[in-house]
Length: 339
Image (cartoon, rainbow, N blue to C red; front, side):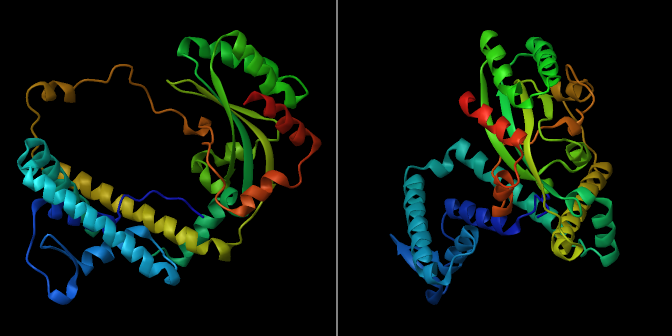
């Protein structure tokens, strides 16, 4: 499915609000029929239980009662701790007061953002068709990739030599020997490394980098430096798993709606900043005019390596084990001794 970031989870925010208010003491007493339990006279409502159940997610009907019991037990434990905190006057501790105020500010801000984002409309059929046609790598030409990844703890002054050695090894015909031979070189250089396997489908990779991944063949490598070190990814297997337009429609609709929600929130933030009078004072005024040390243009995300995550479904796992060529098997065999 399409993965789209969305910072708007109102249910979680409301649940968090419940916890904050609980820390401040009791509110108005609910109706007796809505009380799930009393803890030293303090009431835990059915509404609190239901909110906590929402955070648990989908629970099979046969397990619903047991899940409710466990949730209520956690709320009872929480209320006991709240009572002890109040008895110790921790609710008056400056750090606690600041934390409660910070949580309140965050909840209110997120609630407003959610209200703005809720006006996002459902994507039209034409928009869905256009997105499907514009991203063949996600749909018509969708693939599942299996990578061997080597994370190397290499300081920046060692990375040029590491890249040069990798390029030298990449010229050889037998790609199965590349990472094992690189591992031997790393040991001589006293550089620590770790080898993992990662199986990812196209939608789990950076959208803008998909064309680059589509050009990769089994045995190809990708070099991605960072301030912490280097990640070297070698493609060990791939399988075509296309999605029809009909299959893709719900995922595209959700992605486009999430994208519009994000744009609405960003546009509102820009509007509010433009309309506000914001004065930075003291040292913070000088900081606003400073260019961060070592600042540079954003890195090219097309060079970003695939993260070491598990397959999203059984189809991806099948891709790692089906239709392997002799070269694919040789690469994976060569990796077994590196861990």
